[in-house]
Image (cartoon, rainbow, N blue to C red; front, side, top):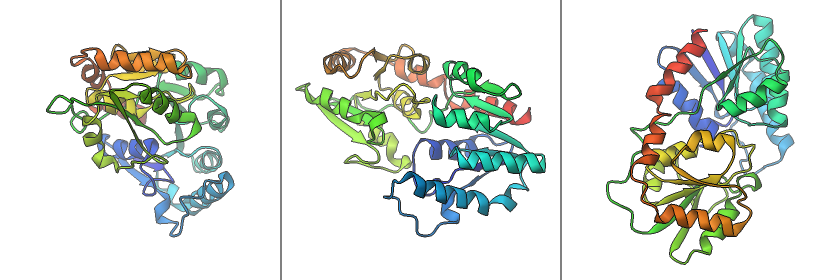
Length: 310
């Protein structure tokens, strides 16, 4: 069985979706999985141009240019939503292929549109996301829950105890990720230092270097808006044995469990400061690492095997 993952930004960026696509290709070994990325078709992409229409045009061009390639695959997995998902549905329907959509966008307009495109299967990353999907899906679309997974042999705890109170946030510096809230809170803690990694921040590293980044921190704090679908960075941080400070919602409760502090209103800086201080002072032992092991690829890869087989 041949599976195509259409990930336009693979080879151009190194974010959650692109990391996920590469991991699926490497970890799910029973199937021939290929990533069809935009770098094969676009030689002069302006990554600094953030205009929505510009990127939709490029994704549309990429989708059309790969039409003949799709015929060779049994399952097509679009990851960039909207126009790409629509074209995939038309092509897969015409050629009698299957389409699977993974809920990377999270609850909101994009995934509502993806559901209207009638995928054969929609994969939610959490049970609470699945509850939302069931409200908007078409009757014949099957919904399954497969959480994100982390390579616990790649992301590991530091060999030595970290002495400096470094509070790490790994996220693109855009409004929905609310990196600025974490920065403001940490700056109010006299013996703590803030570090942000990701697009739009002072520091950016390739994914291959991220284990070292996590190992230099003592606490991981990320307080996205609640429509964040999952947050693979939570798993990477916990696999590095970092306690988590995050928003209090069903998705984050499902991911973090007992390995962190939940702040109901992170825009209340005082409450966020209190949460970070508590995380810095508490002895967490190996609780974060044990929580991450529930989401290891050893445990999750079989769910992908079952999905593709079905």
